[in-house]
Length: 302
Ligand SMILES: [Mg+2]
Image 1 (tube, rainbow, N blue to C red):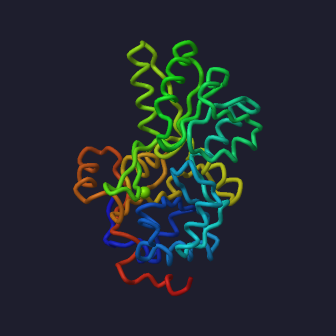
Image 2 (spheres, helix red, strand yellow):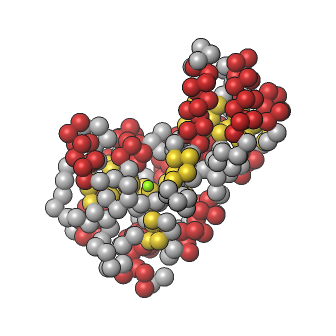
Image 3 (cartoon, rainbow, N blue to C red):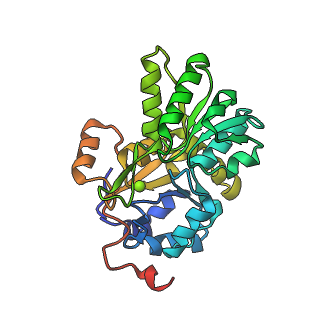
């Protein structure tokens, strides 16, 4: 589906908002790029907040707490409440609680927001030499001590291939301040572990929580219903606004939600054309952004 408007704000104000009951926002490439607000993003987001329109903010950042993440957005001028954030870390808590993992002992590799785990009474083990004594593994962000982690988890999983392994953030890489612009993500660590075990005849079933996997959406929808009374029987009335086909749009398609792709992030028009041609991860709407550059009215208000 395509619309004549190139920007979300005029499309929304012209009547599109009547078609939706809630909005889900991606952060990077949608609200900000390298912590700098994108044109019209603050104007639109803050208006949604003022109007009390049901919304949630979805991040695949699994290392920072929601308060830390909200503070970053607040310093960029977004009136975001940390309680409206959902991350792979909170989605993991939601999953673990539902599946009876409370009060177990987890090995946590590197940076992971463990606040939600503590709420469930989960004991955290950080020493890789004690990994074999744990009930499950969580692959957090960054690569420090990767060799020791791979060695211990590989040898443990050979003996106990049913030991649950969670990789909350599935991203294979993420935008960073390195000269190349990217850093290797936890999804790549999980892939490496799967590959090594595959050659030992073990197909490791890693459980991912972030976009495009349903864990983060399951928690988001539950919160929309509980906090805002959103009717989940009409998922097409929930709009996901994102900038990637494989993450934001794929997740929305999987969950039956509507999706609006913004070309202000990592996706080009050629990639969108390919998605429509193949009908794989094709968004419902495509926009250049929230508004044309230089018209960020909200910037004067914050
Ligand atoms: Mg993004």
